[in-house]
Amino acid sequence: MSILVELLKASEGLEKKVPVIDLDGSKISEVALPRVFYAPLREDLVWRGFIHLQTHKLQPKGAFKGSGHKYSVESWGAGYGMARISRIKASGTGKAQAGGMVPSAVGGRPTHPPTPEKKIYKELNRKEKKMALITAVAFTGVLDAVKKRGHRIPENMSLPIVVNSKIESIARTRELREFLEKIGLKEELERCREKKIRAGKGKRRGRRYKRRTGPLIVVLEDLGVSEAAENIPGVDVVKLKDLSVLHLAPGAKPGRLTIYSVNAFEKIDEILLGGLK
Image (cartoon, rainbow, N blue to C red; front, top):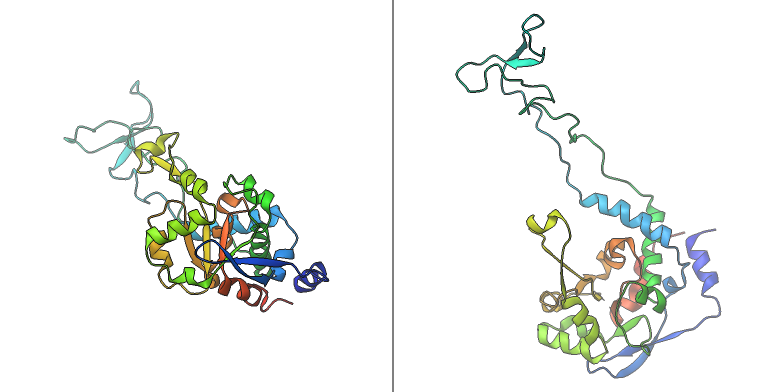
């Protein structure tokens, strides 16, 4: 059975309305819930889509082919009372007669180095990738899934959160922060502001601190809101056409707190279900 038919059957006879919130935090209207929010909730599908898409950001790496081959070496053979390891022939370098080239010698070649030819780019079927995205969107409308990720939201908040399209034009950080606090996300912003010192060697490799992942704002057109969100820790902005499982399920865990502009919310079925059979 096709994906579209499954969604149509799941949404048959259901006409749920979602409130639209104005920039002052008041309810101004209602909009119908798109069909993608009736998709089956499959965490395994979201995890698979996330892992495959994450490999597309990896950079090939490997050891230098000439690593450990700087000197000319030769084994002396038996009869010298010394190990028959390959020894450096160059004289006057301070390394003459020392072991070289072999993995057991200081400065020798790597034993089993990573190879740049290794295939790290994983591919995913087109329909499976689209279904993972649709499922990740459906998780954003489930209160238990959002709370399970650790987001701090009011008990009476209805999901998904849909706001006036004027949010796309907010260009000042202060205005965006005030709006998020008005709809009840002040505690969530405080959670994202906290910094945690990373455990392990990453502390001395330029990534000492870790921050929490906060709300995601999905817009149809970015008219300045992305610049306003840059200085708010944890808040990200993405256009609907660029929406990915990487945005909706950081760490392969679905249920990220997501705020939709009403323009994007009304187009979400057209964008995600278009081309599916």
